Image (tube, rainbow, N blue to C red; front, side, top):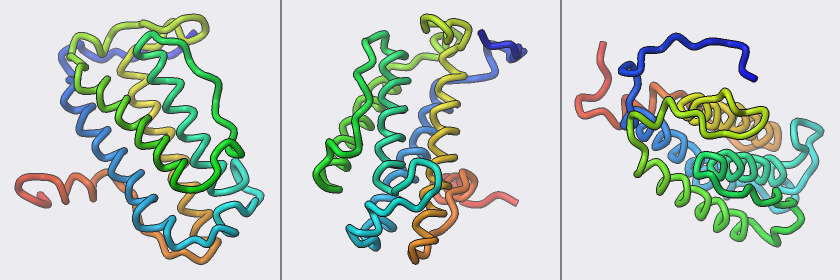
Length: 179
């Protein structure tokens, strides 16, 4: 049960804002894959760094598993068992699976309507959570674990950069940075 009440007007949120927030989320995930992971050796990718889920590989698989679970719940379908990092033979198999998960998430988000944000479609201990709370949680969870990934990769010698939403907004706004 969610003990915190969120007194937000039903008109204060809209599905388009969540789609934009997820575009940021996916963009930052792609940055991890395209800008930083190629700089890691296979040995570093698998190395247990004694932090969070251990290795960069395990951290990424954790993110995939969590996003899969929450979006299955959002769609009302059975949650598959989480994938074991050892079930992936190489980085490309992980990337292919993550791309599938992203595609599924984008499909859900494409059908998201404003009135759906306040539904409570979840069973059991999550029954008091609304769709908007879970959507926000998934992006926040991703930001947290990407920060951990960035720290891991930095410790392994990869120069990383910021993942702030505002930088994404500046880059993707029609007018650029506003003062």
